[in-house]
Length: 396
Ligand SMILES: Cc1ncc(COP(=O)(O)O)c(C=O)c1O
Image (cartoon, rainbow, N blue to C red):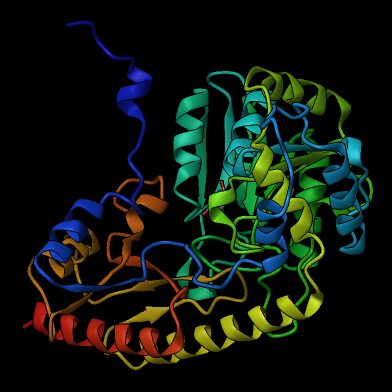
């Protein structure tokens, strides 16, 4: 039998999805599962986006331009300018989700063997994108004690080699919920300029910033135009994960020219979904006020609930809709599996994402889980109660 590639062998499985077979088996046994493991919001998609697909009169579902509809890019640039991100339509390539934008970014700025520095824990699929591009992730560890704020710049500087091409930042952070301050972004920008590096900022959770704290985009730092690359998506902003629309944004013409060749190779982003995403831009600000209020309440409920469970330590998130929690268990992977396979309370259990997969330093985050607060408050409350009971039983 022919061999598969080393790359294929080395592709990491998603820590978020790897417990799915155990969850499916639990459901078959009649258990109800509160899913705290995946960032799938339960918020309704704006009606305008859904109506735009229902009510259009397309007769041929054709390819679009490889960079995406011009009308969409023009309207998107207006949305960015309203958010202090001074870009034009030609600085944007529409992609099949933020995921493809991350692939295009890696493909455009790295060669096999190059290094990208990433504060960890980080969005687990960065591991997969790096493997696919033959790129080495150089992690820099954040700590739960200081809520996963930016590690000292001197620590970043120690990691820079002649192979370093970029720093990849997720702001607000998945899985940490950390929202970088303007000073932290500026420090990174200064470092990137000093060492001639790119900063790739994954800002797909931009709208999810709580407690009145403002989100600062990498694109709004004057002087960083040639080094800054932004990855974005409609998945979370409009609760449109299934649309599969994102974008890559940069003022750097060489980066965009390279990315455009990747975009041409896959022909175009999905047509119907672009129609929906373009219409979603008309979503009134009140939608985000409502969503923000809902997530703030969910976050408060979750953090207060977790704080009350003996032995649980949690970093308070300021953005996105995740938190990292340290549990009084040795191996959160085993505990998460046990929750699905062996535990139930009144035929109910919870599903969490073991956090080790969000780190690339081996044996790190072994007793941590990522919790997504994407459930309605009453369900979230119940899930926390069940988690507390499960921990007591597990540690008996
Ligand atoms: C930090 C981060 N970046 C990128 C993505 C990719 O999102 P999508 O491909 O749905 O736009 C996700 C999805 O969960 C994410 O959490």
